[in-house]
Length: 182
Image (cartoon, rainbow, N blue to C red; front, side, top):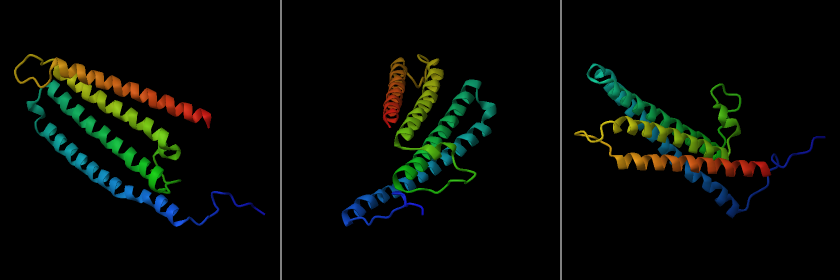
């Protein structure tokens, strides 16, 4: 006879435990809101892509590069949204039951709060890198009329980017220490 595992056993919850456990569903509208935000980013992407295609002959190579970096930025932010929506919902609200589905993201099979934090930190560093690269490209115009960046803004963006990197290293280190103990 096969023993029932504790995970398969159903224990009735007290009303307060039901309330506390059920409160996770309060996050559901937040994830729906992030889906709406992602739709806004899709609209922004299409708008910027149309702008690039329709004015490609009028742009310099540098301007094209800046628009393309902007498109990459939108894609990276959208990827970040997918990680938060899918990973957060799966981790904190309810299982999506995607096991065996051909489109299941590879990272979802081993996601937990620690891994999600590390992946988010890495995505934020990627997004920050794109912004910093755009700033460096625009920095060549410092001192010219209509320049959009200053030396001080370049310095602060670099410092903030380095803070993101150090934070990600710290998060990964703490997660690794926690995983090593288990």
